[in-house]
Image 1 (cartoon, rainbow, N blue to C red):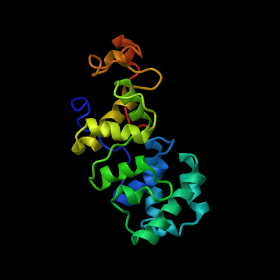
Image 2 (cartoon, one colour; image 1 turned 60 degrees about the vertical axis):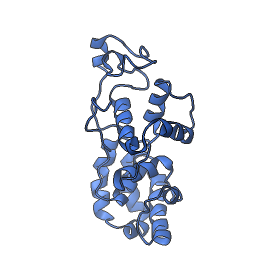
Image 3 (cartoon, rainbow, N blue to C red; image 1 turned 45 degrees about the horizontal axis):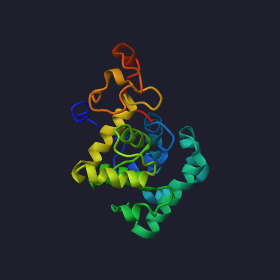
Length: 214
């Protein structure tokens, strides 16, 4: 995967820990491409955490409407910002134990922010990650936290963030949920799930996608 995806990175656009935190909250059940279309307007209107904390709910909902679940996401973003102001002096915390106390922030979101905004290694166990590690035969677990800890024991900590990106990129581009492109997969000779999708190179090539994705 390192050879196949040498440039793997977070596909959400951001310029600060706060922007990445907001973008990651918006990315729930939404494509990164769509989030990246919405965030320039959002970031310009709310440049500081205090701006988010004091935001007019209806105005924010209208800006992020196209990302889906916009009411719940607005609640999370405003609540997160108020908590950052109240508990952390207006600065997004750089520790997992603190991030997960914020409204709308679970371990997955926290690890995205830690790994990509603070350079603190973290495993992003999203649906792609969960699917692929099961297909690799590494675990039968379905609980994201258990998967995170199990994979964390297999992969050197310094590699956690970039490994997450590579797995997610592979899941988005080749190892799809319904019809993985097995016939052109660079991991075909290593994967115990080879054959889940078409093994014909011609047929599989048609299934390969380019990003950014959900």
